[in-house]
Image (cartoon, rainbow, N blue to C red):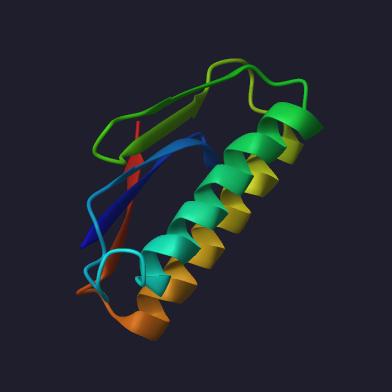
Length: 107
């Protein structure tokens, strides 16, 4: 199961982390893992290329990803992270919480 945690402060998302594997299908054929990865990496790349915000991210060998905007969060970055949240909660609803669980952590 993939655990997605979104970090929120003052009603604005500023980061997220993803850990685990969906286990929806065999390695290389897991469409849930592929979808989550594509959405997450597109979010990181979009923040880096489309905003002036300073973002740091870390990808571990196990495949987990942490991303945080460490500058003031622009409305553009907030929108991109909100979009990721919508995408992942959509996968969670469609495929089930056995494969993806989405959480919000207020800090």
